[in-house]
Length: 219
Image (cartoon, rainbow, N blue to C red):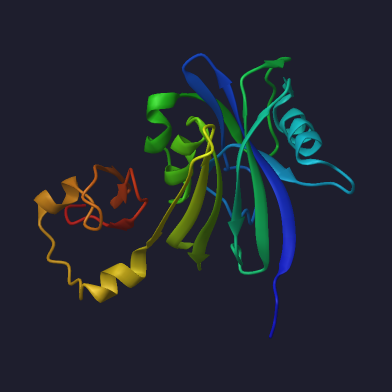
């Protein structure tokens, strides 16, 4: 059976009061993340620890030097880009020094924390970004196929030793329910799968909770 190659990477969400530093991927040609907003980060170099990798990557992409970035979780993305399984360590950096500089990877911007989920994010990012600010560590697997988010499973480790698990399979649940959409403008105000609030961007309806994305009915 064919196997994907493995890629190890870090992703960091640099903080200042009330805001997070985000990278709009709009500069590199043939960027798989083109148009998306991401945290800062990249692939490990030979012999690096996750902490060494994230400090180096943030500095290279922004000019900021992180001080003791906090590891908040780890996510596996099987065959994410059709070429490799990605294993990503996620950090928050609340302490840093330096002056922000232009990035070759995209456009950097400080975004208000209450607006993060309004950005053009990967659907799975809408799930894990709130987890970064919780008082528990997470280990998760996010499933994508041809750029579409298909579900996730996650385990959370609380500071009190409590372990919690959750999962969601978008396509499986929709098919099981024999879901046939009947578009009405009012339907664009909530998620058809979980009932949560949604945001609208470029005629796409995106759930702010589970990340389910569909076309809107009133372009």
